[in-house]
Length: 178
Image (cartoon, rainbow, N blue to C red; front, side):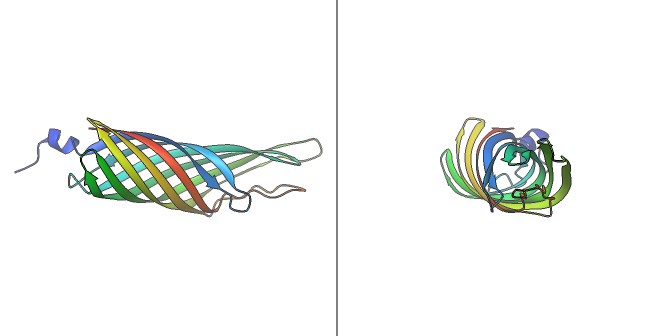
């Protein structure tokens, strides 16, 4: 028999995360981040599918001025939760998608300022632990990823800024189970 709509909704969640990513491997840069996500558990347990969107930002000072960075991401992913004991669980997730990077310069006198804007690809692997209290789930997730193909900010008389490469991060999430 078909599954009632109310039962299907019990296998979904909406969530928000705050955290940070360390990017720019040549000169590490910490970008705070905010993440919104919707998750669906098609089998009701163990495996989930995710749609997520996120924003990261930071300001970087160079000798010739400052650079304002913004990374907007749209990801799809899959996760597994093989470790469950009461309200506690351990999980892993793999996500990938498009990342649009904007690096805008604010130049000092005598320098020209411009903006670099463009898309790239980002993929990441997360490992986390969760605790569920009624319909609220708290998650702590460590993540490693790779950003590729986004533009670099070219800086006169100083180090250029590229966010491409390996990244690491930590997120604290809260999910409302529907």
